[in-house]
Image (cartoon, rainbow, N blue to C red; front, side):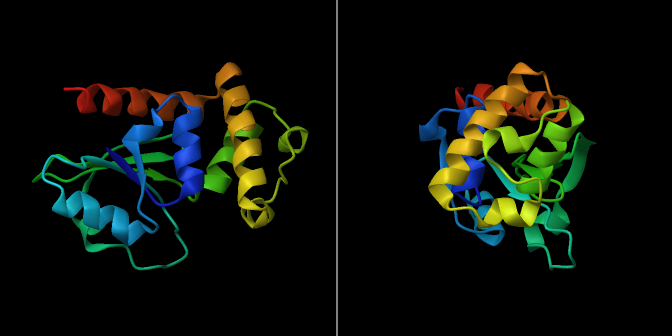
Length: 162
């Protein structure tokens, strides 16, 4: 199981090929961390936004070690349990917009505004549909951040199938 903060995170993972049944929405970063902390082997992976504007991080994130950081994806691991947490930096919306910019894709073509705050304000159904189309296009364009996240998702899917 991969536990994520919200519907937009879930849609991103599904657009990148993660089966819907393997993704659970927890509702908040603290809840994602609680699932990982309490999981044993049931929930071994999570994905959250960094949210860098001075917010206190959940205690589990403070204990986790940085395994890798590239293309706006920080991979944290709990040394005790081996649970892993993907952190999109700074937030999913900015991460996707930066990935599009990196391969010269205008998000306007997909009905999305180039401003992360405006992106987040869109009605959920519209935002998810437009995000799905954009992410698939970025995959086709071989966007390095998208490819990097896909790599980690493949590793997670493989571990979950054991």
